[in-house]
Length: 184
Image (cartoon, rainbow, N blue to C red):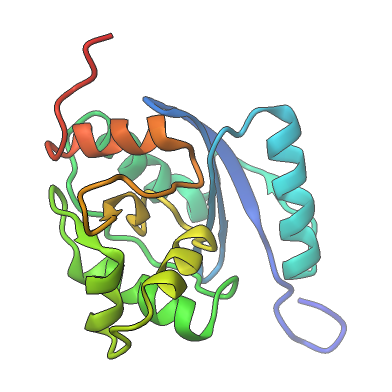
């Protein structure tokens, strides 16, 4: 507690090796707050600086923290093909407004092994003209993989963009059976 009797914000993090490379997972007392692709030194350090700035506290590396234990277990099970859904408390404090509304709909309404178009997802929240805004929300997703922005594709069947890179998106969709496994 701080001098005013309030709980101080606490952020813990760990890096998990996955089939798409290292992912940084960060959590607060509220839940998982951030997932970052390509979490090698430079990317990891930059992500941790952004978290410290946005959340007002220095993240601590604590892979054994109870705040991260279940998230790590579920992410590892997902990449092992043993888990289809994430059942984790999420801290949505890094996103708000329309972006949060879209990501919430994505998390609850687009199940494993399916995809949705940008425009279709916009329509689900009452903004059928908002396909481009959905694209921006996907790019701002602080919880990729867990909030499955890889399941959002173009209306013509194209993959669209992806913050983790198109190869990672292909691998995630292949893991879920939407695309065939890469040949090599």
